[in-house]
Image: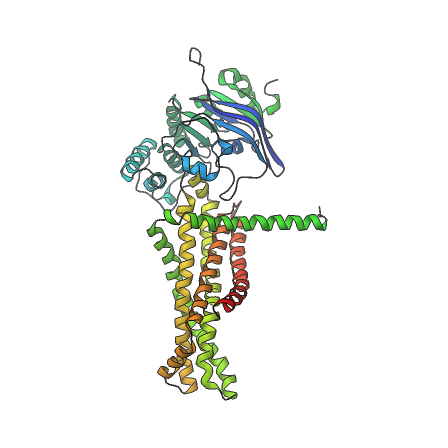
Length: 262
Length: 259
């Protein structure tokens, strides 16, 4: 990225602690750069998805804010700078932050099985206040972009098609931030290449911040400009990809995360 | 590790407090989102809850009416007051049996239906995806189901009362040698408006209990299908249990107020 202007932070995490039974997520300080793609790397159960869910404020369940959660996550991608953890479910809904500003693609896609692929995109848009004609136009555009036919049923979609539909649904909101939880896991080589190309195209848009959880070196090489290593619920290392190339190579060679920067 | 008794009791009280808060949250959400609820969502849920359960509740009510006639007529005829059978069937069915057994059947059908349907929405990640897209879960899922269940229970109780009395009339008129018209006239004479008010007020209360249990257990976080099954069972058992307790409370309150 040499020669480019220094970027600000889309997210600034401060003194974040979340106790989940025997697991504890502890992030004293972390900055996620604006307009860049950040890869969250680490072994299974290192806290990547947990941190991502907090950045997107989709943690916990319908009923309550999880217990044992403290700290701050400052977000600069909205109209005003916001401390995300201080917002209640009702405030989040009222501000329509999630969806239109913070797009989230889940590892288990959370598709609506009783709706067609097109309706999977239009229904959330309409429910979130987008006019029907506009929602249909966006759905058509996004499904074409991910290469999905609108008229099929969700039950007949393959794993790769489900991932593409989940991505199309998130992109239809035209979010400024896209949070992706292992969007390329379990795909066949052809589907993987297609989706990777699409993500690379989306990542090239400097107006959009992307945070991706992945276990694949190929995804990091194609997409990431910034890397965060997680280990045991803590950030082990973070920085621009160019500065972390050696650590990335060691990580994918199977070296323990705590030895990456030694 | 076994906790000392006071600590274990504290954990139990805290868990009960969490459950009560969750039920309160569901009922509060259904009230707050009532103005935003779409009419077609309500009608759809009402159809799912009430229409689908009508054959079950109707047939059960018809036979329950006949069974009460059978059991009461035996004793009352022996005592020489067989002519009071329509009175007893009418009052007991309208005030107690109609609302209670409709609610128990609804706990099994609607309570389990709500808990399993919403449970699948939660387990499959749809509820989380809805939150992630600013979709109002209270308006889309909670309010139509809660109000559909409450109104559906009221409608089914009305139908159960009517069919129970018809069942009683069919068997009672034959068993007691009364004409159906005579039997019905005795039934109508035996009933006061307060009896009907009592039965229907209870139906509303039971509907709230069933909806609250089904919706609350449905929306609870689930790790796997086993938890979904346990939550569904808990919704049915707790709703049935609470209906029976609430019946006693409602009866006491209603008798103290409207008689």
